[in-house]
Structure formats: C-alpha cells, structure tokens
Amino acid sequence: MSSAAAAAANNLAPPKWEWNWVMLERFVFRRDDDESFPDESKAPMRASGTTSWGAPFLVAFKLADPPAISRLYAQLSGFPPDPSKQATSLDILATHRHLALFRPQQQPCLFLLTQTTPPFTLPHMDDTLICRRRRLLGPPPPDHDWRRRVMTIASMGVLSRGEREFAVAEVKFFYGRRTLRSDKVYADIFWLRSSSPVPGGGAIVDGQWKSARVPVLASSSSSGDKSHPITWQDFSWQTDTVVPVHNRLCWVNNYRGILFCDLFQEPTPTLSLVRFPSTDDDVRTIPASCRRLYCGASAIDAGRALKFVRGGRGFTITCQTLVLDTMVWSKDYTVTSDELWSVNPPEHLPRSILMFPQVKVDRPHILHFLITDDFSRYVVMKKMWVVTIDMDTRVAHSCFQYINGREDTGTEDADLTQQKSMCPDSFLPCELFKSLHISR
Image (cartoon, rainbow, N blue to C red; front, side):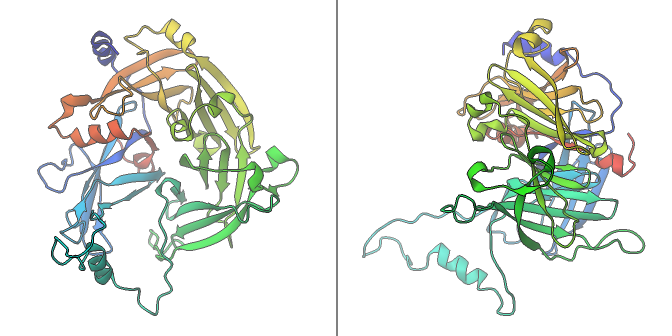
C-alpha cells in the first residue's frame, strides 16, 4: 500500500452506527502495575476474583464502536506463582453472551541437552533441570486417579445457557483402527459444566471435567432421512474456529463443514456434522494452515442462523447461510476483486488481500476484514488496517489503521503489534455488555 493511499485510508472515518456488539481483540493487554492499567473512565466494565492458587486478579474491558476494536486488560500480579518462571501475555479463547473464557500462560524453562563424555566441563551435570523439575512436581497423590493430557486450545469453546448455566468444552478426534475402512470416526469430548442455578442467582462450578467418546454423525439434511456415522475414509478434521450458536457449540473446519454439539444434553453430548454444500476447488489449492486467514463463521439472528464467508483464489469472496431449523445451506453471493475495486478507489479500499472476514452481527450484509501492507514473515512490526464493506452495494464504508508497525515501538501497543505481525488472528464477536445491560 502506498503512503498516499494509507494516509487517505486513515482519513476515511468509521460511520457512527448504533451498536449492540463489539469486536474483541484476542490479545490480552497484561498490565500488572496500577499506572499502566486503565482507570474506570476508560474501561468501565470490570471483574475481579481470586485464582485457584490464591492470587487476586482484575480484568477490564475497553469497549469501542465497531469497526473499532475493543480490548481486554488484565492485572494478574500473582502469576506465575513461581517467581523463577517467566510470565507471558494472556489469551482470550472464546466469548458467548455474558461469558468470556481466557487463560493465563507461562513460558516453560528452556534448557539444552548436549551429548558429551566424561570428564564433564560443566559442574553438576547429573543435576539437570529436568530432574529438578520432576523432583519439584513429584508424583500425583496415590488417592487420585489422574490422567494427564495436553489441552488443545484451538478446539476449546464456551457456551452459555440462560443467565446462570455455562459449559466449557474441547473436542479431539479418534479415528480407530485404520485397517478397517468401515470403522466409524469417534470424537473425545471433554467438558466442564456449571451446576444447576442456585437460589439467589449465580452458578457454582463443581470443578470436575467429564469426558465421553461418541461417534460423529452426519446430519439428516446432508445424508437422507436419518443420521448415520461418518467413516474415516471420507473424513478428516482440523478445527479452524469454535463458534457458539444459540444453545449449541460448533467446531468449524473451513474445508469440511461444521460439527454441532449440545453440551447440555443428557447423559452424554452428541456430535453431528453439517457439510458445506459443495467443495470449492479453489479451497483445495490453499494450504490448511492458511485457510483460516480467509474464512470466517458468525452466528446471526439471535443464533437462529450461521453465516460462513470463504475467500478463494483470485480474490473471490463467497457467503453462505445455514438456517438451524432446517439445517439447509443457501448461497447469498459471490463477489470478485474486480467488482469491489471497480466501485472503490484505492484510498477507500486498498489493493490487498482481505483476511479474517467478520460478519457484522446486527447487519449481516456488512463485513469487516483485516488487511496488511506486507506479507513477509521477516517483518517483525507490520502495519494493518480494518476495512468495512457493504456487500449489498460493494461499497467500502471505512478503512482505519489498526496497528502502526514500527511506529508502535516503545508504545503501549508494542506487544500487540509484534504479536499480530507474527501471528495474525481474527477478532471475537462479543455481546458482553449487552447481556449485562451496560450502556455507553
């Protein structure tokens, strides 16, 4: 993008719309000192509590009118509990209604293992870090039946039901013995549910994770009159995003389809697959690691429908809608770059690839995109813009600068710019303040 086009794009201000939702930045701004933590005038929506290890924490939301991006600030001075371990930023994993799911993380201690023979040149080579860590952690208590596993963050989501019930869930796939082509595909569901609502409001988390291995079923709309199991021969899966849709949690693969799960179903949740209406050959040419850049799924109409936007080769954008009552797809439109560029000058719509499409929840014909001026992996601090397009008229409503590249060095946004430049990500549609009846 030229400097003239960038300057003109920054002058195209976002329109003043009435808003009841926000686009939330997944990157959490960790500010443990009071001086850098925003006050209530800048971030009025706050929550505080105590972690399981007894450390107090405070989070605050700085809300902005879309297409501007809202932020979450966190103050977690007691983490990590071990001062010798290096703390990193927090991440928001998911939101739904009045809930936000985020996790603190820490960098593991790094060490090098080298092959050598006596005499050792370094003292105490037998007392390696890995041995010290094992002695520090120790074995689990004998009266606990613990099964350790690595949580797949990309497959985790949160689901709210009503005002006092919620569930957190993760899905992993189990393909069974591949020597038998007729074998079913199974999924291991791990979920944590709140208890039933208690008198006086609120809900109590019992702290017990549950798990079940269930077959993946094809939905009736795509396979006939009744559901049937999917076989591994015609199924492979990599979760690109997790979306809550009304009372169900959906795992989306931008190439295969969408898995629907009712986490509150008793006694065990079930999984059903709704395939996309057709396989786009353009998507086959895009590496799986890149497909998440050009696709997006959003719940609309109070969770009664789901829109899926997919980018293809030649800068083609296709939008489809799935109505949950019938589980039938309908195609909304297909737009090419020629159509968009013919009605939008470069200063309004920069000639760059549109990434991470986000449907405007209350006006689904409007899409927000993220663009950058440099796709090189070697550029540590990049510039990025948020573009808003009315897909009915093909007209760009706004284009404003989101991060400023090297200009953010030394500012409060430096950690955000570095993270986004190396690992760009989508924004989270959020209705937290709407659910809590908070007004501007």
